[in-house]
Length: 115
Length: 114
Image (cartoon, each protein chain N blue to C red):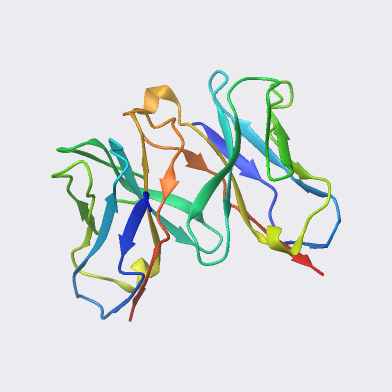
């Protein structure tokens, strides 16, 4: 079935370091792809999305490019801040043949940024 | 503020007790769902609903019941709590009846079963 695989964390970086969190997917066709972020003590919230191949989603300095050749949607940020400390989830819609189940999430990658 | 509201935020139960986690949204979203979040397991879907009067099972439905009598509310009932149900529960909603749309999440309900 459709699924996403994220790099396992935790990831610990110093402030202003470059961030990459890898996400690869298995899917039928070319679904939309999402990154969600969960700050401590909160629910998940949409960070960015891309709706078709070669699209780049961006928000709050984060970027991710939908690459169909490598079935990847890696999350990047050029200079992380302490406030970026959170858990990041890659997600995609389920296979249309599986009915109307909601988004399928990766297991999440915890990022800690130290000053 | 518009959004998804979950109550209670924290709850401690004894094994065998029952309770209901409440979820309400004021965005007129047709689609609602419940997930549980456990360390190392990510988010797992419990139940979901594509509209009032319609519910369906997700990946881990055993031990949980849901109903959808109104568009706004989607309560999750634990019939006889077990320690394995200790978790953080999230309710989420989205517009339309497709599972492919952006989800808006509540802040979560942390449940401990002793």
